[in-house]
Image (spheres, rainbow, N blue to C red):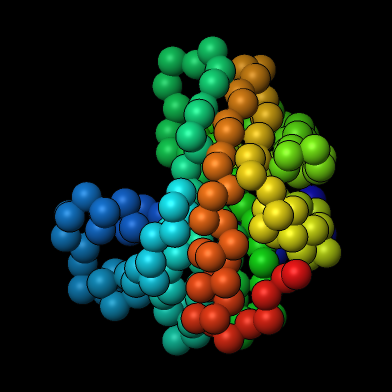
Amino acid sequence: MKKHAHRLVRNSFAAAFGAIACLLALGLPTSGAQAQNSPQLIDVYSKWEAYTYSEDGQKVCYMGSQPTSAKGDYTQRGKIYVMVTHRPALKLLNEVSFITGYTYQSGSEVDLRIDSKRFKLFTHDDSAWAVNSEEDRKLVSSMKSGSTMVVVGHSSRGTKTTDTYSLSGFTAAYNAISKACNTKPVN
């Protein structure tokens, strides 16, 4: 788990800014400190939204989407979304993260399919990631050329979930965050 620790720490940032984005989307006020670091919408690209914000004085760019379909035998589930994040100041680019709305089964992996391509992701709490930056780049490349992404995971109670995302607008949103953060996009 130590080799993935940097991804776990950043998950707390994703959760915090996801909460702020939800408040803004609902038109609810945020505190002054939050407003200074509040995500700024770049634009909406079909099923994807692109944002920037400042973290410790450094620009961060990210994009996100919610599933078009979420299936599973569950009674309650939190927010479900996927994000791709650039943190140029930390030289962390193209990080793909999935927030699932429940705690994953300990030690479980997520099965990810983008059209006919298959990937495995590691999990921690309610999040899943690729094991390294090279896998992130492969995911982003597949997302750019794909049309549908299916994420299959298992909750701590053993419930299987299947979340389907549209990749319509992915490339435009990805290009927008890459431009906003002055990073070279993945081919």
